[in-house]
Image (cartoon, rainbow, N blue to C red; front, side, top):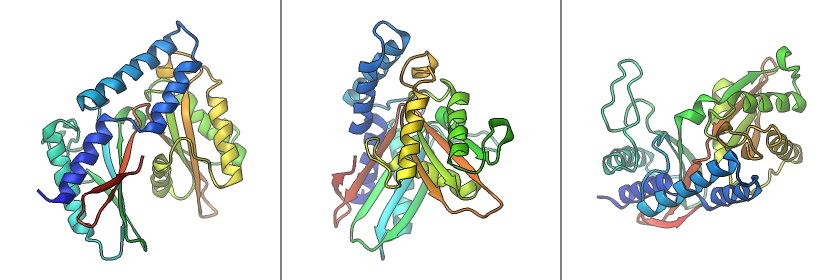
Amino acid sequence: MSALLESLIELIRRTSAEIPDDVNAALVRSLEQEKKGTIAESALKIIERNIELAKRKSQPICQDTGSVIFYVDCPVGFDQIECEEAAREAVKQATKKGFLRQNSVDSITGKNDGTNLGPGAPVVHFHQHREPTVEIRLILKGGGCENVGAQYSLPDEALHANRDLDGCRRSILNAVLQAQGKGCGPGILGVCIGGDRATGYEFSKQQFLRKLDDRNLDPKLDALEQDILKTANELGIGPMGFGGKTTLLGVKICAANRVPASYFVSVSYMCWAYRRQGITLNATHGIEGWLY
């Protein structure tokens, strides 16, 4: 087995079984804020116990191990074909080992061959940079939270949402309101303002690569992130939709250029099982360090 393949299998295992420290800290803070004896507190305690058991037993945090999405930052000359082949083999072997559920089906026939491989599965994004390092990040995104993502085309008369940041705010909060507990909250939002219908969703998912405790470098987007987080947590939806103070753990927003005729707001929703991890590879493609 090649070192790259071993590294990717371990990346999948750890991503599936362990919540990143920043997410765990946010969940702990949320538990402390919920009123004692409520269903919200009970739900968060179950989540906390689930996280502990999954890590100790090295088993998936959630039975829905979701879509497998790799993000590879690599230098010029890095063999992207070899990397994608290794990623596909790693997914196959990780599925056999039980780190991933047999979770990918043919959309026409409904057949599941048990490998998690097929057209678009896994997804591998490459980005070339001028640094010598290779960094590989992985997101496992469950179907429940994917189902409550939303895309808005502004202006939206029903929401009284115009083509401005207030219109974006109205759209994003509407997505939270419509999701209720169906996205396995408390959730995290990744949002892209602008772009086209495809890149808007792509960029919104890339926001999940940010840490929960970072701050947006754009003052206007930073203010919007903080406002939506505060407002959403005042809606009373709470963990799993049972009511409470914790509807969202974080909001991450970016903006992309658009053509004048279109103004899209793309909202991706991540469940509390925020499975995101990353590695830096050494010269022989072994794991040099962990990114989260």
